[in-house]
Amino acid sequence: MSHAWKRFLFIRLPTAVLGIALLAQTLAWSLSGVTMRRNRTDELALTVLSDPTNYRVILLGDSITRNATARFALGVPGQVGNLATHAHFGMPGEILLLQRYLRTHAAPQYVVLAFAPVMYRQISDIRLVRYTLWHTFRGPDEQDFLRSQYPGIDSRDWLPAAADVQVRIVEPVFSLLKSHYLRLRQRGPDRIGSGSDEPNPNAPTDASRPMPAAVERALAEGLRNVDAPINAVLLRRLCQLGQDHGFRIKIAWPPMPSELENLLVGRGALTQLTEELNTIMSTGCHVDEIFDFNRVRTYPATSFHLDLIHLFGDGWEQRYASDLRRYLNEIADRSSSSEASGAPGLTRAR
Image 1 (cartoon, rainbow, N blue to C red):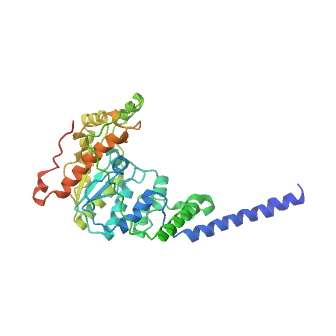
Image 2 (cartoon, rainbow, N blue to C red):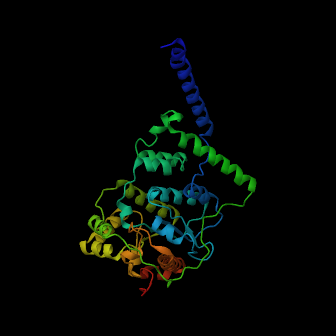
């Protein structure tokens, strides 16, 4: 090997690598305090602190509800704060959103949980939690909670920034540029997103063509019997928030394929889950009977995408959004004297 090659391999190349690593580390340190604005959930985590409206009902949910309601008004302005996100954000993210909202707002009358039953037994991968929550919720108490429930979630923070360029440098840079852009526009306070369209309860629908194998797989999986201790911790935390702030908690099952629900009911899985939730939440709060949107109208497998999770097409989404709007408005308008009468009296749609 020539002297020039030895000089390149043993002096110049290591020096260049070390220089790039030091530059990346310096950039990461300088960007460590940047508020992340990577996606809708990052923006929502900021908006709940700045929205000037005190909502009467706060809706928490997964993407089944978020996708179906994003374009539609769920009540008159100021009535419903729609904080539904997606499964990767999950219950931990939703409860952290609610906590942020409560720091700067008067308490709502109700907090409604519209999660699919499987979400109460779902455990998110720590890598997804780190990406979706760790860099979004940076308050000391928020990060302490995430550390306590996901040991090792902060382990990658000790790695060189050059090993995680996207999260440590690229995304903070774009978030910083977006913050500067929004500041130059001098917009008013951000508000929680709410649609303006009126959902039609009788909107025409399309039918999907789910693969028979997908239907069989969903029926075989049913409702997984997985121990998810973090979800129990979150529900107790929600009950404590209800006690501290004086709001009531409602739980509703969003639409699921009727074939699947019939199976879960026949096996007693939904009854068992309901009993588990009542046990978990028996200390500190009282949850009324869980409201089931499949009792309002029938949602066959053909009303869902191939994943058999999200509603298929505008028509089915409008129907669910309409039923949800009515449910939320009924509980918001209910007087204290009628509170003890039970669940809202939605009639089954044809």
